[in-house]
Image 1: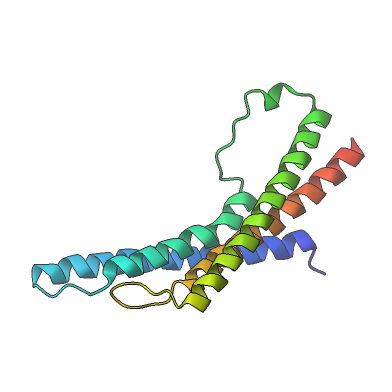
Image 2 (image 1 turned 120 degrees about the vertical axis):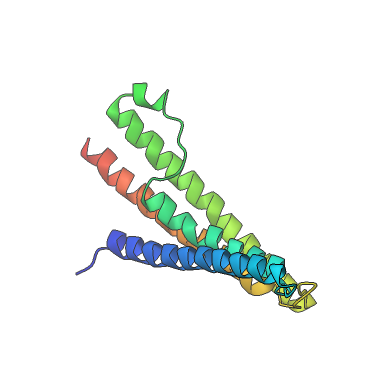
Length: 161
């Protein structure tokens, strides 16, 4: 049976592939637009599409970054603590961060719904904003879940020490 941690890691990995695909799309679109500008045939809305793809890249890479511990951490003081205190600080940090990203998920979802109801669209292509804000909300939700799983793991480690 697949553990809770493995399921979270697999889904975070999948979301990271979506983020990578959006970065590839940004690169491809920008390169194509630059080449076509040489022939005086730019792609309309390139700037908007690159912005939307950027929101997908950032939002969907959050959880994988946390799973892989690829984020910036300041550990000068942390390393001087005894192992049990380090575990406690890890647990506390994960819980607070999970709460923060839970609130961010909720607020991004509320903003997306407001944008949907208002009918907000981009200027050139008139693409709606709300699906991309929902995507950021989904990325924040996945990060909150990942951090909560980290919290549970830290609690297990703390109980063993």
